[in-house]
Length: 173
Image 1: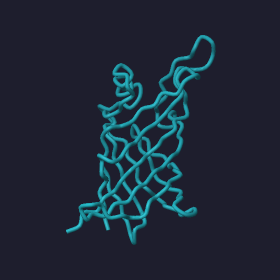
Image 2 (image 1 turned 60 degrees about the horizontal axis):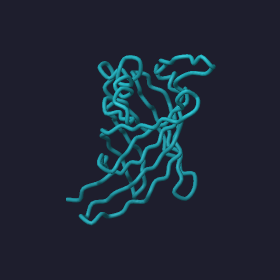
Image 3 (image 1 turned 30 degrees about the vertical axis):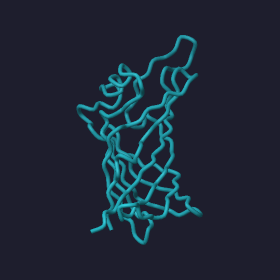
């Protein structure tokens, strides 16, 4: 049974080291997607994120991240994730494998996830939640722009931590 991503109850965020000393956090404001849920269990999911919706609390940085140096939103308007495997670990813990596409590069990624059982909302719709974390090397997705620092190191770290909290809804009727 197909369920729709509830974008108003979903967040896709990331964090990366800045100048090797601090962590900068950001998120994407716009996402759409769907999931297949059987017997209250997530079987698969597809999510599209609008790359231009990136927000890091600094408009200059956001503009740079939208440019060809990073996400190149003119030529690659979406990031896309599609599951290839959902494996139960124990309790509510799962390992979710899938293909992530950024800047036209598609690579496998594995996320550690907690998947809630389906519940009914006050309006009679069924909902399921997925909270997932993972890490990727941004250079593997052609997000390689950087600046060497005079004291050593680089301006932007290579490892990017990602966190997703998603809610899917199946409307009754």
